[in-house]
Length: 580
Image (cartoon, rainbow, N blue to C red; front, side, top):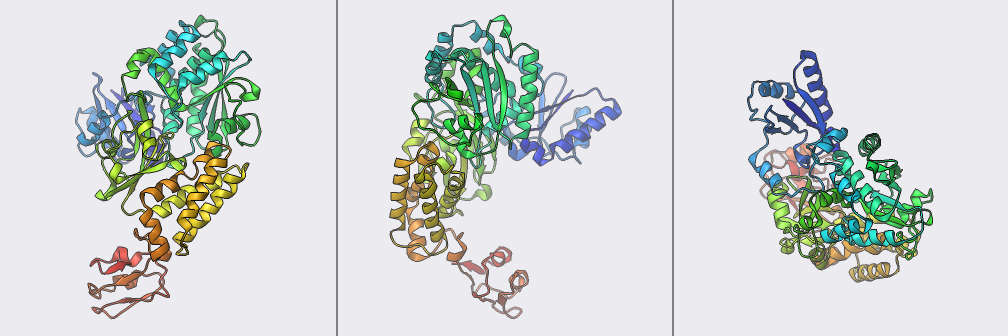
């Protein structure tokens, strides 16, 4: 029997380490013939901690939300070949998992990320062996046939970038992995690095061979300590097994990889800012051209792809570019990994074929919205993206379709928004992030985002003025026209998108001094209606004693004292407290 505990960051946060320690103590203490292993996140973050139990025939039973105080009883039942019905995963959750098509994440949650033999057992490094028996041109052509586009946001053809670096004559050349994942609500790269690090290494080695690079660098933010730890282990194991270093697999090709831990600046996701950081400079963008393929790290030809892009490469060389191209839509091939967050029931990581309708992702895979509230929008592409409103929920999720409706694919963050959200507040949240993360090099981004944020803050405080929406739109256009890098160019996107799709909410904040979603405190008031029974529960829970009234008599709220905390509304059992 084999017992596997999910030990990704989400599992650890939910208590998986405690579960693992209890199991380890029990198995070792009683000398049980059980193989105890760890794995990464399988994607079902909402079900952590997850424990998989395989019988001697390889049959899997998955148990979810397993706490340390329940795991011994679970183990005892498994030994007796019984199913713990209270912890077994539901058919609904299993079905939603089956609706995915996993390529970049195919091994996440199934193999031990700290054991190279697990990766090799499922076909690891087979793609590299095939690639090393091809010419560099043939490798690039295979990626072209696959139709793989960069998964970091822009969707630029991967083969084109590789070919540009390959054709440069200057040496040395560098292959860089951008793992500086900084979008709010995004954790795709982290999960892949934690769950299947060898896959990324293999993709980088193949890419390095294609362009003629001998050095690979993984630029990963220091906030990902578990990812860095497992990458360190994987790199050491790959060297020991001959997949990194001198004369890889007797091919005559030399290639090694090192890790650079970044300080967590969002702007370093932009490739020229990333290069500056690698060189020890402040992470600030540079003008293009020249492009990194021409003059990148230390002025030498450099190719940069993100984690998910590299994670697709081994599959392409194991199965062939033609097979990969069969997945997805006409212009967007393959699959895409998304981090489903926000007001979604089944938050976590999903991987689906390009072109799947948004509705299917949210309801069939994500299980719909929390508390069955009404779907309002989804923010795609993080603070550089835009929102897709409810009326466009059947939009196919591929590069062309998403761009057409005013959002971007981005790296894969998908923040689900329900009817309770204020879109002015949401616009303020995303712009606040990009304003703080601006490197300050160009005036348009440094000052323009600050001025836009000031207007949004005024709106949420009830101080919005006629013409503010038009000023926001003009500022946005000016920033997009004058900003130096993509952080600045795309910073106004969420604001423009939300104005376009929810203009009436912005107008209500300005003209009526009201927040339709009842979120902005300065624009709401609490009143007690005739439904009041005089139970006094609201008065007893008011932190500032703003509610008065006799027992069994109607109560009133002193608006001068009320801090609008909403406690009275939350505790009232008779729907007597109204928000206006």
